[in-house]
Amino acid sequence: ICYFHENQLTYPMADDRDRDYQYGMTNITSCLAADAVWFNSRFHLNDFLDGAEWLLGKMPDFAPEHVIADIRDKAAVYPPPVLARRVDRTDWKTRDVPTILWCHRWEYDKNPEPFFDALLRLAQTGYNFRLVLLGQRFRTVPPVFASSWDRLRPSIVHTGHIPDPVEYQSALADCDIVVSTAIQENFGIAVVEAILAGCQPLLPDRLVYPEIIPKRFHQTCLYPSDADLLGRLRNALAGPGRMTPASIAELQD
View 1 (cartoon, rainbow, N blue to C red):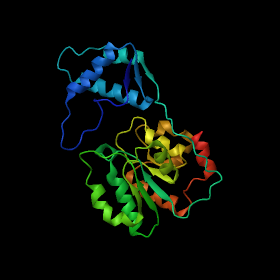
View 2: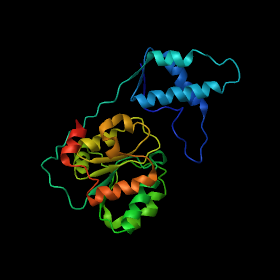
View 3: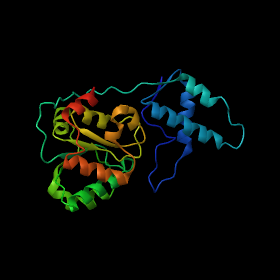
């Protein structure tokens, strides 16, 4: 079995790096050698096949015609298990000052710039919110984290990775709205964990998110563009756009 959580054909590259297509070709040959090929989402499977078809189409001669069909025939979708506990907030009192959550890696593919741009605009126009910045950071951190720090400092209640699972789940349960602005997401374990902890999701209407959010919640939980995120956050903070605990419980199901 060859299992893909990510792949080297479609993973977005940082601005200062060029793609080495040999890694993508290795992904393709690994699929051909495997008895079964599993992906963590239907979106990821289709995205991979599109990327493989594009790369093979660039071959100048003798491009094999059977590869995509062979991979598709042995491919299946097996989402990863999410072991986080579900938090029922139906009896909780709605907090007057909501807490906004960032629960992603501090890396370029999570596209933090639109997130911080929206928060800074909210702060400048007098909206009250708390901010929790979770997620691991690595050697290269997008500059927007540092450049936004001072202006958002009064709202920040926690920043940094929490390695202990129990403490991490407790931190999620203290938040109200989880936001993603990612340009790369094939499943979204961190977002699913936040939803199970009772957070209202505001996610881009792209990548895997329309797959993991039930269709009846798309209008509430998915936004079509970065420009639309600001309005959705305003509505959620002001009240009209905030999901009720009962609605979040239904989403968790």
